[in-house]
Image (cartoon, rainbow, N blue to C red; front, side, top):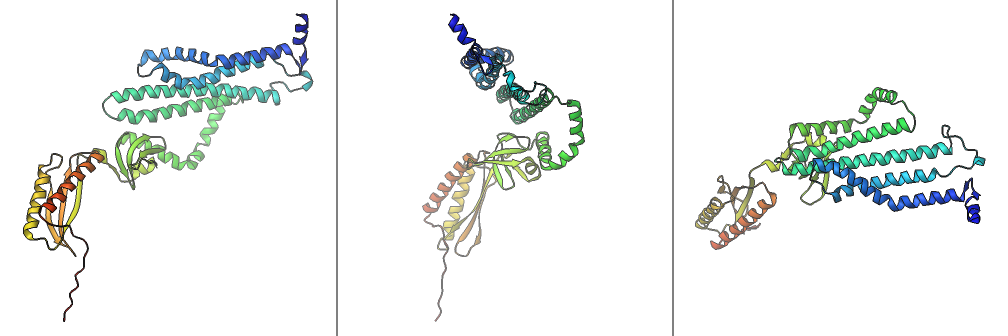
Length: 366
């Protein structure tokens, strides 16, 4: 036993073997039990959220909180472990209140601890946003789905700003009041430098106040069209028909001619049907009548239908067909349009007529 104590009391780089053993044991305990402690703390926080909302499960809550809480508790164990060690005196390091290796290590560790707490706060904001989105899905209307992601981003920005000021004040001992005053003086220069960003931010507020569209609407802004997935600080994200994701600056969404296709109750179909010149007038009359009956009797077509022989083209009779499909769903609209096109094909074939194609007739006189 005495020999073991002698070995443990052996000094190596300014610390005894016993101190190194305690350090290693604490770190190992931290690595092994950080997940268990993280789960325990997550359950305690979950009980608080459970009182106010049943929209989130313990599994989902742990998915949000686990990583930042694990990092925080691991840093706590690392701090306890390193507190068992001392820098060798013969290194002659500067004290913690003077610039040197000791100050750099202490300040860096403090930044890590504050950053882990900041990460936890950001994840709690995500949990809050998840709960609010679930509640908004049950409520009528789309206003909640539109404004909640925006408010969550606002809260995150506020948390990050508070975290930055906390690091500057705690770690670097800066006067926060003087810093805020300096930022106020330099605000004009920042505003000029971030002119585009500010315009997009004002555009986002205009969207929320004016409500020209909401999340889930199918819109067309300029040359871009798609389903609105997210309205953020700077931009709006659209999912196009090709399933690509297009990010449009809010300034353009406000200034461009915006067509909210989800608000229309009907979708128009307008095309010209060309029949060959060897089609008789009787055939054309019967074809026109059958197409009118088809459109007038279709359950998904409106009453304002137009089927008329409008002209004589270069190589065909031209029949104008205009009708409206009573749906805002684009894919349903395509389905109805396809059905009617097949019926028109059958009508033309039933009357033994044919569609025209570009031809040229050359007459040679003797």
